Length: 282
Figure 1 (tube, rainbow, N blue to C red):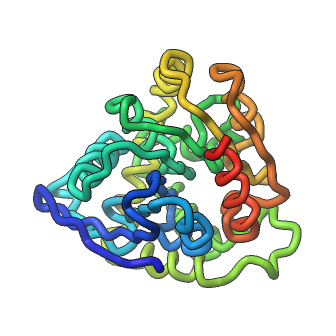
Figure 2: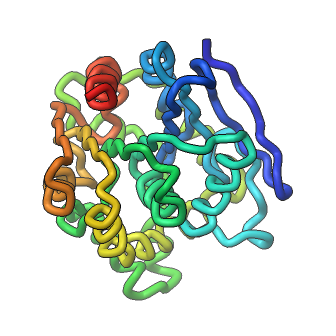
Figure 3: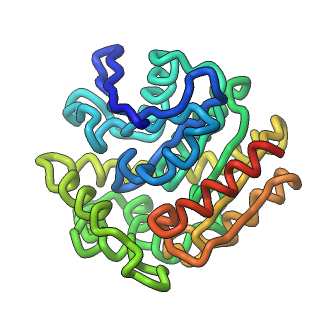
């Protein structure tokens, strides 16, 4: 059964879900924007029979305590540092990391810092290549180029409730398969006071991830981690080319596409879980 906890360390309070025997191999699940560990509600029980599964909420997301922007800079570097400390606080020594969306630059930063701890990388629409970025990033790139108040305000469209619903349903052949639970909870979290500004901070800081793409790719070549890419092929933000590109730096990477959108677990949790189990037992 899944259990629910808080890890407290260095003044931080990180919520996480956990299932499976601690003696089993560990998989760390890292969510993306604008969601939380709730996105793994169907995947966790599908993996827990054979694996120790841990899914934290990133700082500023879900049930994790949200520090004031006056006391912490919301950057991907800092998110990765907190999650690194989190893994140490709960005693994770070696683990496979499942990365989605924002979870990708967080997880890959962990891999750069602690390559000896990473047993495998499972990327579900978690990008590490320029060719994986769609034209949907143009407004965000404009803010990277010129961080004006107008360009920042333009990004508020990404935080609107209807946009979150669109992110969940775009590219899904049968939208009736997408439960409203996920996007409704995300919209609740986004409506909390101050959340909009920290999310805009992270959209602005995403350029630091793009700047690290070449470093991530060098990590793939040097350390040759086992890589599985499971990708919703109709993702409006991260293109299939981003999944295929893993093979360029790691020829043994395994790539699987599913006929769905960005939030592939909403429609294909069973299939993705089976793919992960097969991959990890090879």
